[in-house]
Length: 261
Length: 266
Image (cartoon, rainbow over all chains, first blue to last red; front, side, top):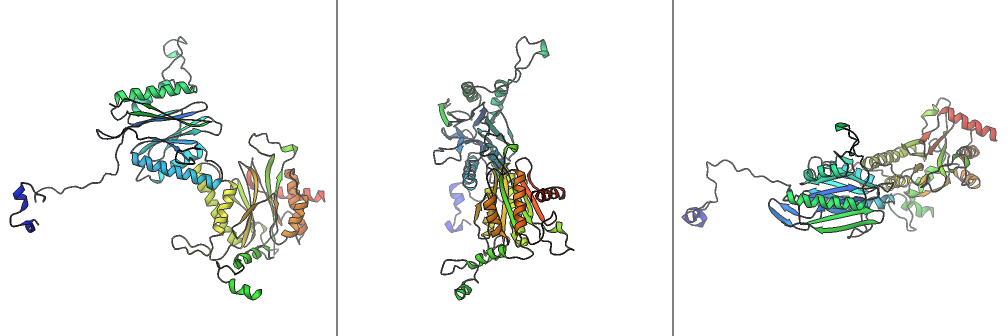
């Protein structure tokens, strides 16, 4: 094999070899098509609005790929800025799959408007996203998606998905690497889990506090608190916080810096 | 003229120098011609009067439904009248009546049913009536294609026209779809062998404040005028599309009642 280089094999001259020792076990080659790009997303609904948020860090192992890689997107807008959109999507997990999923859903929502002469409802979009995900049941989009908008009555609507399309409408949901840190916080602060009305009874007879839709200012602050806390405890979360607030008046995008450490 | 015609009416997708597609024009004749497969049809899109007021904010008008009616030409006393199917369901909220080659209509109806189910599967909502009509017309126009990659499509235009009635978020709607792939929305429309007379009658009698009963009567009266046989509960068929009940074909009892009401009015 090496004989064309000269009489003496090159490997002996330089002290290393390209050929495997004959007694070595067969090298197993592999291709792993997925990467975990980390980060977290979060969605909360109110009476007349919905918020989707995500940090903007993208990681690969201990490396940071980017400090600004958005995870929240407008779906079905009229132009590149997303103007005219009434649905938002957040994706976290494998960024390339998230990007592909967002592009696909965006095209579907646009085509729907041309074909049926009306904007797609969030409910219809939610079902469509589920079928898109399930169609790749055996080579899934490796993402946790959250879809948000306003329903037919103008109330905030939020749908969360697993990677193969199982979905549910909820009041709030955290996804991604810090989901396990954020979700219990939301259970307590949005759905008032483990909160009781003071002096309403003795011991377990205490009356639980009933959840009700929160005002926008409160929800925005909850989102900020959730992320600043997640940044402290999870290395894959940080750099920036991207928030999209969807109301009757359209979609508002808010960016605030997070710690870059 | 005739000579020029015969040169260009063989190729299914060949324009004549005057810009006509003869085979498509001939398919329109199949709808008009009288034969056992071809029938009178009348459909009236009626609007409600005072007795059925719907108080829903997004309801544009007080519109309430569509009535479809066909003559079932029973050619033999031995023929089972119920086996003549000229009104069929496409989905819960859409139905259609046909005139022309019934076998061709089955292709179109099957396609429309699949489209409706697909839409419901993907979007968790019923397909709009206009979108359903568009889907039917898309197929109607796909004749003469070479189908290498999928199941082969029709080699000639469909010899059938459909009246598609349905109810969606825009209220009750009636569409007329032709073999040429064009469709129009109507308030009232008649197709088939007696359609000229029937359409003229509809034009005179139709108004926007028809009630359900009045619409039934108008459909039956129109059919009666153009039918050769004496109209009875066996040789006509009615169907309705309403918001509450969706699409439904009248059963024998309801047909008997509707025809009896007509007798009283005459």
